Length: 121
Length: 316
Image (cartoon, rainbow over all chains, first blue to last red; front, top):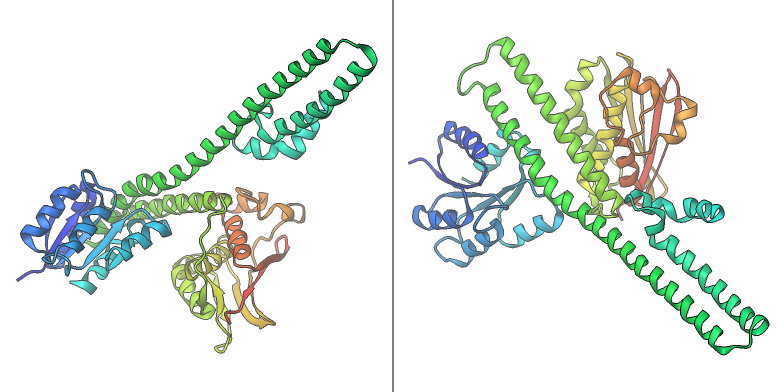
């Protein structure tokens, strides 16, 4: 069965491009456009990996991460933070909040993001 | 007030000018004026009350008048400080917003372009690939410019974070050579390094150290004359690692050498040779080297070439 990835990202164009690239690699990809619906979706579908943006409407990425790690049912799912914020404070906050990896979108080619994802799922 | 203007211009005005604040709202200048006024007021009050009048009411009125003037100037000074604070706050906000808002559409552009170039949707023709490559290149240039501008803003705010750890210089140079290989080949330039295997690690920030080499080598390749070799040497000198990056390119004219590390500066011969460039690379390199407790200097001869030297501490 194909591995399931949940992509919580408010920018539809990024969802479309990365989603397509991951589907070409054989993954099943589902998306959420805001933090709140993203969190609800995680609990429902239990993905193998979560890609999480930080600046999100309704509930920001940091809060989503906190909620995920609080819940026994979701805390083991690896989370890759995928954002364009790059201050050391934001990186530190995400990693100490339980994120497995922190990627600054603007610094990565599509292939390299896919490679990082394959390392975890 | 000519004397005051001259003093203001050279001592205080520089900082306020940077934030577009007029001289008469510049806190440090106003403090200076306030100080002068205070002294003048004390002297004149003393002189007037001891020599020209015996009326205590006039002395009292004078004191009140002077206090009023000082109070007004004080309020203007506080407003001036407020403006500086606002300008500073805006800079921090700009960095955070620019990081996200400018980079997001550029990321979309880059990834959509990557998808098309990979051929997973439909295999592009040779001609289509050429134009997709133009999109990719323009996108990289925009991203680099944004990154450079953000770095410059951070440097000016004294906020360039360096995570100091032992760094293997030989490996960094190999990585940068790999990144710039295509560009060097396109310009018919050979990249050569001579770094001993047993060179001790430097105490530096991995990413920022790589930026030093990237920027210096990018310049060397860009300003080469379509041939030649770029040599990177590194050796231990006392408690430092000393590195040199030398090229046989267009060089820096003597008259412009003193400006080479300035923000946005590009020498005339550089601009004639290659119009693409922001003039930020060396400003950033110097800031990183100095934040890394190092030194940077260079030797150059127009039309012969340039050698940049820098040294950074060894990791103990």
